[in-house]
Length: 225
Image (cartoon, rainbow, N blue to C red; front, side, top):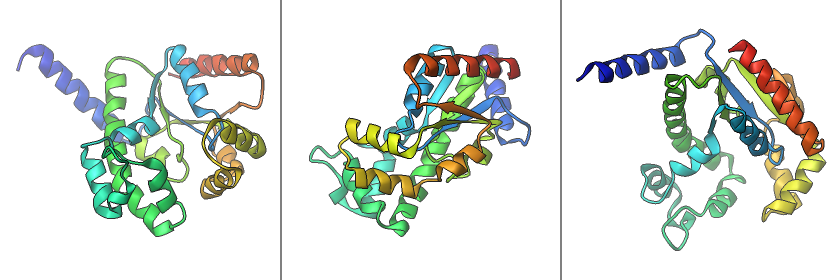
């Protein structure tokens, strides 16, 4: 092992120790309810220079065709959750688990450890490159105790009135209003998210106002980290 490899190994170990310590780390969580616009805000933060890690993307990757995660899901829920090409049919899986708390718990028990491990590796990579603060997009941040698991020092909540969120989702996805409201009911309430927020981005506004909110937030975060 050469000096450069040894230095990288030591740095990665230090970063892992930082993630597992109780000291505040330069890691910020970003969350919001379905249809709130988390992806829009995280994309704007990435354009401003943030190292953004989207746990939704990781959640899809850990159950990609041929993955260990997909095999575990099929073992638990059967091949009925597969599409014709052998990939995961997410709509079928969702219809199976969201009406069954026990099944949803089983699914979370499979996916969350895989998602967490990959997310932490990506956090380490961002920090090793000096890209801080790291922004982790976590849809179920409050529901899964993510602040403690990832050592989050701040939480950003993207907020939107429920009716407006429902309208946006129905217009952009193949979901009925009833299905959207059912998803909302299964998540932390709007009030719970706002109570746990360090920063709130109001996404009920026009695009220019939203952009300015994100710019102001990024400036604030850079003064902290």
